[in-house]
Length: 303
Image 1 (cartoon, rainbow, N blue to C red):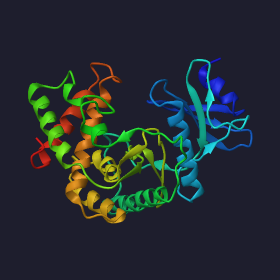
Image 2 (cartoon, rainbow, N blue to C red):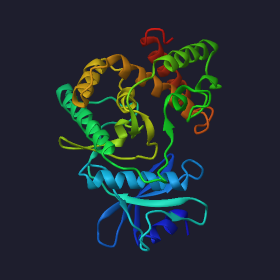
Image 3 (tube, rainbow, N blue to C red):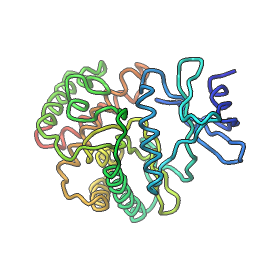
């Protein structure tokens, strides 16, 4: 029996297909009721059991408040998180209909006015998520990573010392260090629980309605970090300024400089993310480095 099959038995479900295999292995599950669910096998050592339970609690509260996010589904024994024989944990969350807003490195072929409307709607949704979160009283055992200044550009960032990437050229390394130091001076703003991974593939569109999925990287951080992350994948596209302005208008902020700073911060973090996860010859190493240098050179004093 595979670990996925073992996990599915806890929900008496049938595996339909593998959806994604990154930080977590995510599979589509058919429940006895006929409903679909997303079964997640959490990568050992990435998030603690307490952190996963905190994520599930937060999503459940947001869903209860009417936000379009996936709520946790209890296993047959009523638990939200089950331990597997291989040391991993598994959880199941409600299936959310929709198509991803986009995919990494893939151009958007929709008419620009349609895309601008979606980015405005995403800004509105992120504001609602942050506002609903601020009305919650977190339980005493709630714990999530900290995407604060240290978590992004400190000496030991959450996703690694990006400026030491082995593929980086000396010039790139110098640029990354300058960008890191500039952000250490600049990163400010409101701090609270954030999604922290609002990439296009984690935003589902069903008509004009949007939902946000994959809260696995969520934590405490600067609120505008969510906007910076949402804009990272289009930062090199010619329509970037319009997308940024639409997102910011929906969210209700006019701080363009800080949003751009958080685009850079996320681009640097993504360089660190590649180091322990991708094969040495994966072209994503070089593309992420090039993007980070591009972002750094756009920010005054950043590169």
